[in-house]
Amino acid sequence: MTILVTGGAGFIGSHMVHMLVDAGETVVVLDNLTTGMRWAVPGAATLVEGDVGDMPFVQDVLRRHGVQSIIHFAASIVVPDSVSDPLGYYYNNTVKTRALIEAAVRENVQHFIFSSTAAVYGMTGEAPVVETAPLKPMSPYGSSKLMSEIILGDVSNAFPLRHVVLRYFNVAGADPKGRVGQSTPRATHLIKVACETALGKRPSMSVFGTDYDTPDGTCLRDYIHVTDLAAAHVAALTHLRNGGASDTFNCGYGRGFSVLQVIEAVKRAAGRDFDVVYGPRRPGDPSRVVSCADKIRQNLGWVPQYDDLDTIVKHALAWEDQLTTRLRNAA
Image (cartoon, one colour):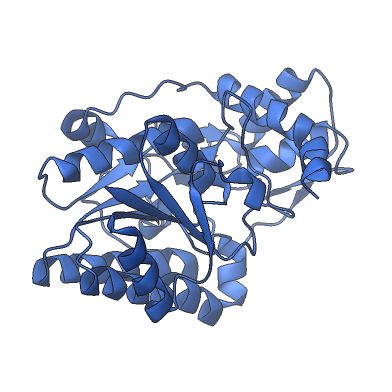
């Protein structure tokens, strides 16, 4: 039962592919390699270079490899960029996802797992956000993902394509075995940027906004280890393979850490101080986003293994420390 992983050469996708291969699954990776790394794909997986929006090409891949399940990661993900380039984000995240879904329907794919985001909720308020909360995205990124969720839901009602939507909170960390991690140049993820700064790869890092309605004035986020997130996808795939109904689940730990708390955790792990520059808020950033992840624990039996900020930071820092050598050897 072949699984197609789109964006499988990227940060989250490569962790997913390693986990599937480790479990003995047959995996085909579809990636255009604009941000993904060829070397991040394990040798046991088949890498196909191409675009998820090219429907005839994707249909051919699905048909040739006998794909029965799709896990869809390929997307543009930077919130501020989506504000300045909304058309690009709607095209890459919504239009191309729609084409992928149609290809799946045409080739009788049975299962579709969609990489969504907590950004579909927007400003969530004080309490941890549940899956039934109002959907009011604050950025074109969040809206582009929500549109794709709606398309997928409507298609699943009309065709025999069952799906799971996983709404990620802030994904960080790296493979505990040191095989893959966040490797994209100019990445904007907070923990990635802080680790680069701690290791001297950046002269300083910026904090965007210190006047939010949070205990220390900086944004509060729910950070989830990338390996635990990959395990959530395995749980979702098992659910669908066992005949489970289409559904939507949050992926987080249920508690938040501020930007300043994350920076302090990186300083502890690195054993050194570094420069932090304070600036104005970025457009599209809500003050706090924390998950309620009870549903995925109860319904899919998901049990996280790395629910600890210091562990997440430790793994991210270890990966960042070896990344320059890894990139040089891959060149």
